[in-house]
Length: 379
Image 1: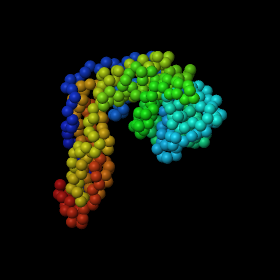
Image 2: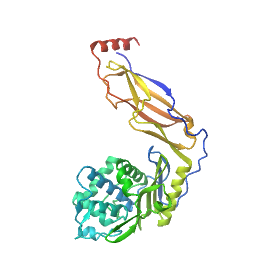
Image 3: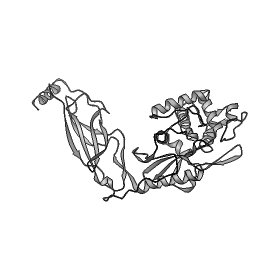
Image 4: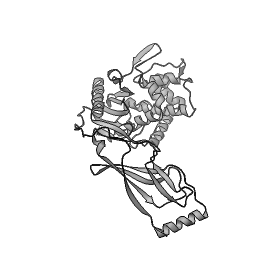
């Protein structure tokens, strides 16, 4: 019986470094907020944060999850944009911000989405929730189930609006994860709705409360929130070139403050950091020997595009090494883990990713298996 062994092969990054010098990175900005987080969209790397895992009240940032569940219902065919939904008395009398829908006036799903996302209408949120789940409480259960699927580990919803409740909470880290998921999973809906600066319904025009849409042309969303207890909150997303950053600001003292602090955070990320595409999905990183298979080799690759976000200039010093469990014996399934690639900077490991088989390898015939068995015995 042969023994498993591993080998390490050093490989070069398959792109040219953008710069060859290391920029001096300023410390994270000091912001007058309860909590904040800045994250690169592609890599998921957190650039800066403060109190990111502390439970907070999300206020109308809740509506990002409400929108996610609605978008998913539309994708699954359970709801249509042009479909009319009834307006209940509960929705009509909702506290807080409104889009001013009326019980006896038809309103479409698309109008409600505009009212919820642009005008932050609580009446729109409740109407959408009731239209999908029958009652807001049942819709909140759907929100929580979706949150678990997305990996929100410290979040609980009890309503679709974000109105205050002691059992309704989240964290800056979970909110960043949720925002990224909506942009990733529903890019067309995001680009269609979240950058709209104003919306008119029932002859009432209301502006988007996200001031950054007017102040920074690179900002294309996402959502504001405010209650007396939560303070002024803002999740923003900005894209410059191929780099998209997501910022979360929680508990600012004013509407102007949440915009200015968000702008500081985004500018810090773009000024001092860069995101680099290291390997594309399914790009061959190395070719591995396969025993007892119809194919003698299999390409090892990553199952998604892989980015690194680092201080500007640091990428030139990144090194990569690969390990593979050997021998690899057929059958192999496409996507099966066959090794690992590790990235280090100045001798410190900064990331490790599984390598997968780029295709399936079926078992060879009797004589092919016999020949490889002999080879393995004499190694």
